[in-house]
Length: 289
Image (tube, rainbow, N blue to C red; front, top):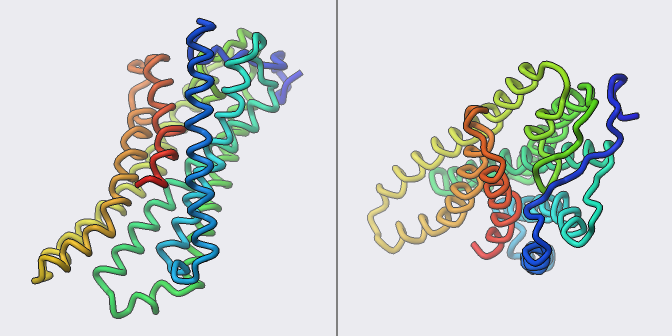
């Protein structure tokens, strides 16, 4: 028996990326390497920030949270995927699926908010440099980071509970490499219109609202940079924002494609590729960027 009173499904079958044994072996080694690079790169950033007192600044404080999120983010899906690529039985328990959905949503939402917080940090640093240390003091930084995490924990639990209390009475095949909430809703033997509306609303709230805050921050930053007379100073100011802008473009671009399209335009294979990009590839690029 699952977590809902009407649920008869005790486990789900993850169809994964391919059924071809040769392709599965190739994918196993490919994603093992990518996962190792992701863990190594982000752990190195965390270690450097902890050990180097010169990096104990707001920008690197938020970067350390981002690296920690990326480590957990990939770890919520990749190990399970690697196990399934080498196993004939590609199953995950009902409870395990629910836990994976919750953890994935917590980390995805937290990363969205963190990227907006990092944009605000750059805005204060460039537009109000003389007041930077006063505005972005330790208490404010901790409060902003805590807000990002609280948004993740609270919003994720609402969607996870709402999804898992739906009746799952078969089939139990998830056409994905992890328990994705939109794919899981297709297995519900009841009306899921409200759930789908809430998933779309979450996409608007968590993707568009922080994205617009980032956009406004960078419009102000660009205006401030253009007022700088020295070309060298303009280049230096913009270079501090370039890496953050690249991460924002990669993460928000792929996430919006995934969660803000009409349901009819979703293709299982396209969804898997987009999920691979923002859930596995982007966290690998973050340390390099």
